[in-house]
Length: 129
Image (cartoon, rainbow, N blue to C red):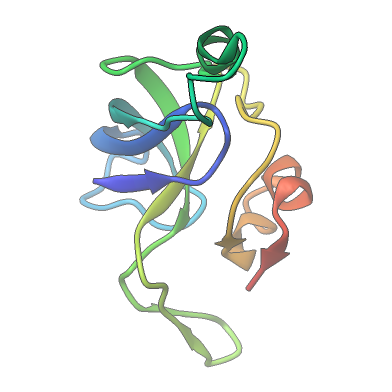
């Protein structure tokens, strides 16, 4: 289970396949996920709130999507000798072409995305570590 940190409408996703063909995914790897829990945007009691909520959710529960891993709880040693470990596992949903589905990211992403040419995700992120 991974947290989804973009505003595509998914809150929690489950990894079903790793496109790297190895045992586990690292930061910057492309995976296939299933949306387990949707994120609720705002209160639906306002004027037309339910219309805005359905329009904001670009994905639904049960959808199969591609994603990029941006944070892992497993320790990762970098070439300069520093060790990086995040609190959770997180990903960003992308379409088949490789562009992010959401327009905004909430949270820190790993700097390893720069080496794997995911500069679009780095530009959307508020901070990379």
